Structures are given as structure tokens and as C-alpha cells.
Image (cartoon, rainbow, N blue to C red):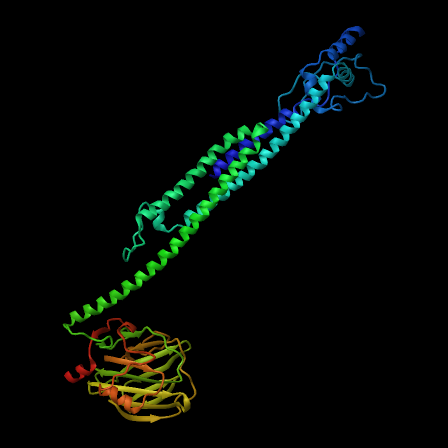
Length: 500
């Protein structure tokens, strides 16, 4: 398209140059008449030139009365008849073909004007015609440039329209979603849109091909106004059609995006359900299991097996964390059942038993020792309650209060948007685990509340008589993800504890 536009502009400039050269190639001044022997001969030549007006006089009239007069004679200069010079071809200021004929002098023009009045009208007509041709050429040049700008603008809009199409619409066939085929994937609709864009492109090509032929006809003054008017009207219609197509394609793209997102969410839900069903079948359980009936198992002590909670915590001024734990440690400390870190503080909440030290609760790097024990390799229900007011804390094991205290990070709120890890202690936000502080065993029913539970509620959870899910973080399969070889298996803690 750019090449066609440049070629069209070059042709029009050549045409305008040729018209201007033809107009300007007429000589600006008449050469003196060739001197003949004898005064009578000179007079006869002058009278013959005045009596026989021809094309030369008509062409010289284009410059007006002043254009034919030669330069005034200098004082003391010899007359033209004394030193006759041969008339040479006159050249204009442009590179055009010279005219060898000489224009008549001012006296001869005066005689001719007096002898033939009809010729004066012919000269005026030629002058007006030349001026009209010049104005027409300038108008055509302006219109052609405007049409070229319009064609470039429409071409750019068409390019943007095609670049805004979805990739599936630019290919040869209809687009297929990688997840599933939906009702929106209609081949007929896609082919119809492709045909519309292709038809618009063909119409632009035809207009560009017809434009040089119409420009050649612009020399005649009569149809000058009809061609651009029809061209502009067609361009306006084409622009309206392009805008309508762009709006339709944008609406279609938005609809496709929403439909694809909904279908992806539905497929992910179905995959989660199927994955849970496969896990049940692998473990030989055909009975229904609730979404919280599972456990996280970490078989060996290392720094890469853990589970991560996907849900972010809000700001807390009090909390109760309860869980079922079965430690399989060989007596070198139970490790870290869970840790919660935030930006700027890796030990926001940590439950840890390192080496032969008692179990500790860390809040904002403040430490309280808890009278809890998990060394018999059995299932135990552990609950930790804390409130920021005076830093009060309580520790429960198997539904019974084992100890309490105060001044543990008093008046410090638990910061939000951190990372909660099961089985590892975080030295940085979400990582830098230490194998000596890792938990080895099973974790189940980890729930978190934003208030302190009552002793009766804790006892009901521990006895499996009043199960209660956390209002901040419930124990659900979709919220816990295992990494590094830690496994997630279906497990009902109350029945499993009885079997164990």
C-alpha cells in the first residue's frame, strides 16, 4: 500500500510539472527581427509580420501586453537594423522544449490589435484557459493528497482491526479452546467475520487501482467535483463499516474471554473432584469422606518436605490454633508443627520443639515454654490460645488445660498477609528451612480462629463430640498443598485414633 501511494504521488507530480512547463515555455520577450538588405526590405518584413498573425502571436499573448516588449534601447546604442542579429530560440526558466519562433514587437502588436479586434478576444481566452488549467491542476493536487491521506488512514485502521482480532480468527480454521469446546466456538460465525474483513480489504485495493484512472480524467474542468465527491462518500461508508466491524469484534472478544474464564473454573472444579476421588480409590476407601477428612504425612526429617496453606491470614488480635499431631521423631525433638512468617518477621507465630528443650510458642520472637509432650508416638489434640491484651496464653492437650501465662508479646497484633507452613520452621518468608527443626509425623485438622475458644469447646473438639472448623482458616483439602514428597491422604482422625 505504501508503494502504491508513493507511485501515485510521483505520477501526479510529473503530470503537474508537464502542465506548468507547457504554460511557462512561451518566450518572455520577442527577439528583434532579422535585418534584410535595404530599408524597404525591413519595412516589408515588419509589415508582413504585422499583417499575418499566426500561432506565434497567439502564444505570445499568453504573457500579456507587457511580456512582448523588449528591453529599452540604451542611449548611443546602434539601431537594430544597423546590426541585424539572427533570431535564436528562446528558453524558459524550466527544462522544457524551446520554441524557435520569435514573438512580435510591441509596435507590431499594436498594429495587429488595431487591424484585427477579434484576435484580442482569442488572446484573452487563451490567457483565461491557461489560468483555469493552472488552478485546476492545483486543486487536483490538493484533492489527490487528501485522498492519499484518507487511504493511508483507512489502511492503518484496517491493519489495527486485523491486529486486534483473536489469534484464532487470524488463522485458517476456527479456534479451539485447549480446555473444552463451548457453544461460542461457531465456525460459521468465524468464517463470516473473516469474509467481511477480506471483502473490505479487496474494496480498498480496487479503490487504489481506480484512483489513477480517475485522476487522468481530471484535466477536463467539468467532472472535477464529481470524482472526489463519490470517492469521499465511498470512503465514509467504508470507514463506517470498519468501525462497526471493530466494535463487533471487540464485543466478541470480551464474550469469548468471559466464557473461557467460566469454563476454565468449572473444569478446575471438576478436576479437583476427580483428583479427590482418585485419591480415595488409591487408598481403598469406597465410603464418602468429608473435605476435612485427610492428613499430611512427613515420613523423614529433611528441609524440603512440607505443606503450605493457600489462604492468607488477616490481622489478628487474638487466636486459637488447634490440630491433631502424631510425632514419629526418635527422641531428638518434635520439630516444628507449624510456623507463620510475615515480611520483616520470620517468627510471627511458631510452635517448636528443638532438641531436648520443651515445646515453645514464639510470637514476634517472644518465647513461652509450653508443658506439652508428644513423645509416645500417638495421636494428640493440641490447642494454643493467645490474646494481645496482656499477652495471655493457654495450652491444651487432649482437651485438658496444661498451662497458661501472660506477657507474651503483649499488645502486639498478628500481622496479615503472611505465609503459613506446616512441618517446617521459616528463617525467611516462605523458605530457608532447617532440617534439624523439621517435624516428622502426621498433621490433621489444623484449624484457626480469631478468638480464644472456651475450655468446653476445646474439650468437645478433642473428644470428637463437637467438631468445629476454624472461622479464619478451616481444615479443607483445597486450602492445603503438599510439597517435596509430603503426602496428603484421606483420614478420619477420630476413627484413625481409635484404630491406632
